[in-house]
Image 1 (cartoon, rainbow, N blue to C red):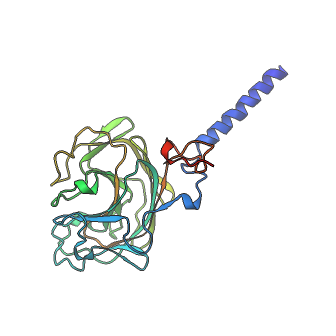
Image 2: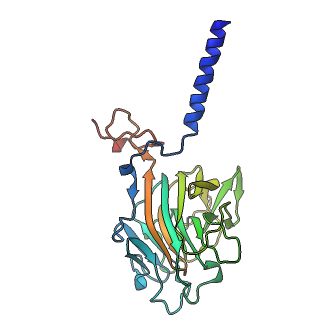
Image 3: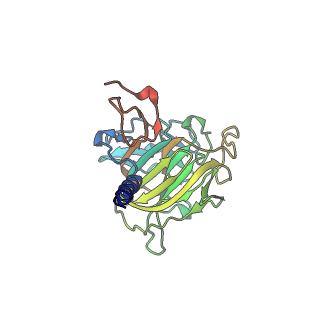
Length: 291
């Protein structure tokens, strides 16, 4: 009986420890220096602009600029917005990662901006490469973490899901609606908001606002509409998205980003290596550095 009780106790302790490990937040144990600062706080190094109607790399009217330590999306050079949707692409693609940003909406919407774009921007993930964007393409084929600010009248949750040229699955079912609202509260005024996106390749994606989960889904894939001007060779409907570009959106309302950082979950998983990290979830043997 004593032996059975001891065995039961050990199993219980083991089970509790396993559950505790399973519930640890993704990225637990990361060092401050492990985070990649996509935005260096000084300039747009590492980013490539693409604005509808202009060539890749042409930053019309300095739409994207850095002032006072923040990336600012501005429209002083726009007599009319004229559907010149823009995106600021980071130069590298990622598959498994945590993405964090701080953003706020400021000022007035550009003249001629669509009503739905009031206090509206986004983080585009699992996107097509900027090099494949066509001159008159409006949005990259991607998954959009839609960022909204309060309009003073209606509930407007943020970190919603929108799907230009894509679909996702939720609870095992294909979702073809273009936008799915999150459970976040509304953030009025020009306050800074922290958004985090947890991305696991072709698997789970989680949105968080100020540390609280507000939405989750999986199996991002190409399909559907709400994107125009694309190269048909790029829009391979049904293709599962396991990685892609990251970009910041310009949709006619001034917005600022003062931090954009990423913790890569792909790396050396050899415990004997100098750069092994316990939070890595996908191995990159070529990255290993011997001690």
